[in-house]
Length: 161
Image (tube, rainbow, N blue to C red):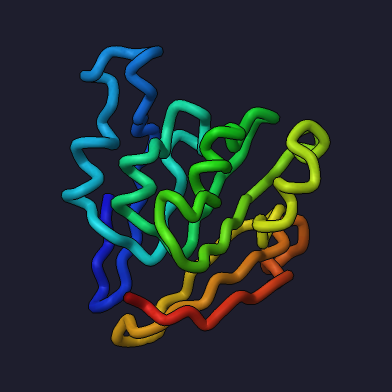
């Protein structure tokens, strides 16, 4: 599902997968053929909660997201391989901010300090508010434990491409 609002582009692929060929058949990779059709985006929600067999190199290279949002629900989300791909300057250059609705303590301990640095929001609802006309946007991390969803952090404004 892709939203185009003037210069702002957002994509969410649900449980789309892009597993490596050495573990799955080619027909199971929906990311690689769709990536060039989707094109570059300002922001996206990681496919399949960021598991290791989603968000492959071809996909990340084509989308070149400025903002990536992970909705974690288990201790192996995001997969280490996925996180490496998202932070790799080899796949595309430029700044990027990564947000997570939840990251388990076990994940932080297992992955170590390299994991925490590029991760901006580590817990809370993630809201992207696009300015009228789509030229810029702001990312909010909300505290879902408080009535009224209090804003914990605000990032941006970012310029839409």
